[in-house]
Amino acid sequence: MKLISWNVNGLRAILKKGFSDFLKFNRPDILCLQETKISAATLSELNLEFSGYKFFGHSALRPGYSGTAVLVKTELVDFIKITNGLNLVEFDSEGRVQTVELRDFYLLNVYFPNANAQLSRLPYRLKFNEALLQYIKKLEKIKPVILTGDYNVAHQEIDLARPKENIGQAGFTFAEREWLSRFLTVGFLDTFRALNGAQIQYSWWSFRSGARVRNIGWRIDYFCASAKLRNMLKKASILDKVTGSDHAPVVLEL
Image (cartoon, rainbow, N blue to C red; front, top):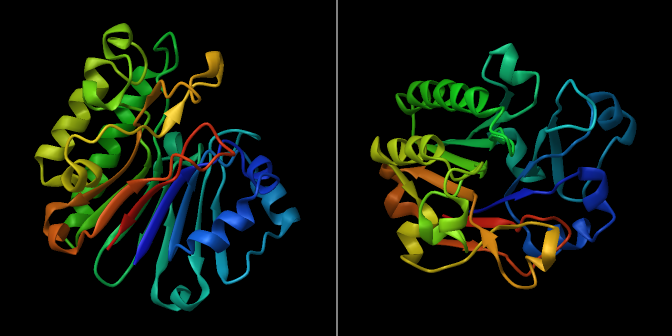
């Protein structure tokens, strides 16, 4: 099974940048999207159809903001169940979490809040982290969990090109990194690190100063999996040559 996650930085924008070709070439069984930036009303108007896939969207109440979506191969639709949100209005109003229940595990598509440059949303982000963790713990009592999406945090210094200059900045604060460390210590694997060791590769680059061309990036998009699934993990990769967004797609093969 091939799973792909991609922060597309606007669904309407990515549709004009070869998204259909990307889908046809990579053929994921499930594609998780973040930062779709499209309202529920607009989604309904567009009536999106992708050959061979069923589209499931979860929009923020605020137009043009946040949002997630999942594309599932048509032949798998009858064997899955998708639910939106954490059943908590303060987070669900931003369309940040989708749960795909498969036979052997849950797949969570998550767009973690950005703490913002002035760290004004760091308290909200940390509260979201804890609510999500409690939700995951409940799911794990039933079956293993794979958590993918834009985590909006680089875990270790190896995960960004300029760690010293970014200590304490949004996405590299102690509090954000400590939560991810704690999450991994309660029985989860960062699949990219588990399968690729100390390989240096990034999944996000600023639009400024030619950061992508110079590969001054951050690895902030992840697939983390319950340790119980370790033997199912075949390959974790980053498609850093795929353009169209400031993020690259990340891949997990089971």
